[in-house]
Amino acid sequence: MKNEVHCLISAGPTREWLDPVRFISNPSSGKMGYALANAAKARGLKVTLVSGPVTLPCPTGVDRILVNTAFEMQEVMGQHFPASSLTIMTAAVCDQRPKVFHEQKIKKDKVSEIIELVPNPDILLSLGKHKRIDQILVGFAAETENHIAHAKIKLQQKNLDWIAVNDVSGNQAFESDDNQLTLISNHGQSIIFEKEDKISLAKKILDLVYP
Ligand code: PMT
Image (cartoon, rainbow, N blue to C red):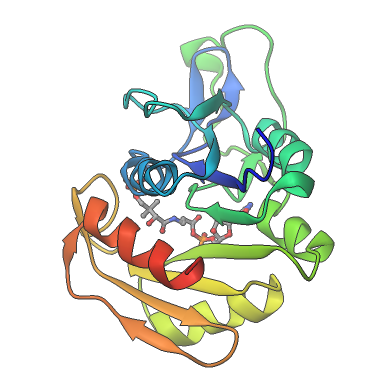
């Protein structure tokens, strides 16, 4: 359709495999990202949702692409980013992966006590490097301490327009229906949202990052 505004959203965890039956991951449920995808669709945007493995159904009218590893997510995000006016990364991408992937299931008595890890690509960092002036890029920061200071560093380092910071200690953000967020802009704006459900928060975030 002509004049459609494209919105690209990532959600959920990635899985980094050690062998065909074992992986490293995190508890992201996808709820925050899926709520944003629903809210963006309701505003008439053309939404592409790049999702790690979650149990949520695909939001109606949204183009969902399922991925598994950080490398797969990076490839799909990179493909869709140039056409996207608004990109939001809520995905909890694993920062590391096992150095070696074993093609066959490792026998119980052969599993090493130490698993060597290597860094994964930082997807948002690379999107930030390629961001055009007409694109808006939003990240999320999952923090357990010095939340605002750490989020501001990520905002700058990754060349973002906005970052939403949440506290992931305990069960406050991962998997929960509710979240408490502070949204910070690269112009020094800082908006504190009270704890509320992710569906309402998603609408409020969109109102600010894409008015
Ligand atoms: O899915 P839910 O259960 O609803 O939980 C929501 C949430 C807690 C996952 C979400 O609100 C959230 O905080 N998402 C960001 C998780 C994260 O990876 O934060 P980070 O501070 O480690 O990363 C900062 C940003 O860089 C994020 O936008 C992340 O998507 C991105 N990143 C991180 C690492 C990496 N290798 N590549 C990335 O692109």
